[in-house]
Length: 422
Image 1 (cartoon, rainbow, N blue to C red):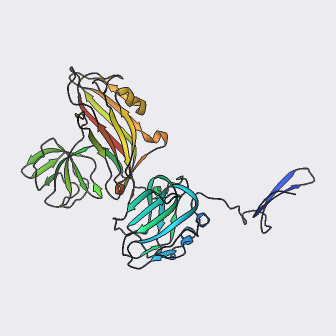
Image 2 (cartoon, rainbow, N blue to C red):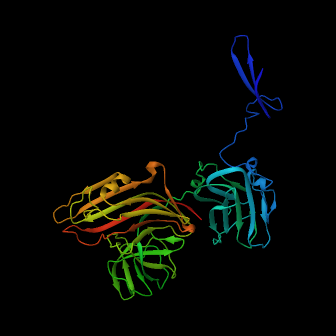
Image 3 (cartoon, rainbow, N blue to C red):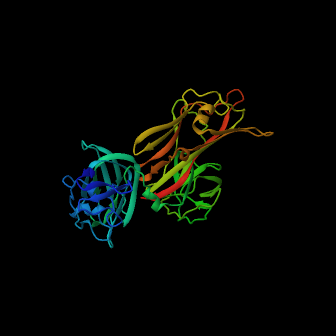
């Protein structure tokens, strides 16, 4: 007998002579489901069936928009070979979709570039804008990663007069498939939070990896012992350097440079020491990836050196703070506070891994902490093209002496890995 039916499936239950129950699933053509006739399932990514083809629009492109999710070959699904700028098409889904990445691939001989994607809700309001339109790099495949977002319509533009052709797209549902790992970059991120002090110079000659003495256009504002940060998008050197000597226009750094640089490279005066007075004007320290880079920050490490002995009721070794140190992430312009620390106990509640170190003879006391985001299955994902960053804001006076107690040094590092190039 039939106990349940759907438009394309019948559940048939048979009772054999041994009184055992046997169940089979029969499709609308009368075929029993087997390896030759598998059960259709929703799957973990977008397929043609998920598209609302009456509201999707190929825009300036020619071809079949549904083939973007039904094409397993290197042939063209959509193409715009004109000089139209921008080129665009619209994907509309039958129901809201949650994801944190969108992948694209071009057919053999084709490319795409200068992508901008608007993620819209049912009202047509843009919930998230991924803007990679200033990137002129021709790509044959790439996965764009962003914070998880729910949307029902995706408007895709290519802001270039160049020909664009696509073979397929991949959009995982519910953000469960981290496809960006396919482009995993093993480069380690180990960066101090710094504030830029407004002093910049440039090398007078191209710099080669391994150089340690650099001739610069000007040394005004720089002194021996200062920290400098080297940046030429999309390249940043491995953390900060200390200046160990200045002789005329030649500066000597504390270690060899890691990369090659041109004469347009910025040598930026920075400070990593957060033991400053932010009680009148709050002071921000940041880590931020360069353009064309995604960083996955897995943990932050703090370190303090103090004159006096710290305990849970103090911040470092000074009195509990009035306003507190703020830790927050800024992702695509949206601000989210991660922590506010008024004393060492607050730090321990977030990190747990906090220790106080005793001073040796003529030495200093210390506070050390480790906040591992991945312990609760989270990473802070920073997209350089969106201007994302993590910042620490000092809102109190951490600089002044307090009856023989003083924070001499307060530094924080962000650690993780490079997780793709944009």
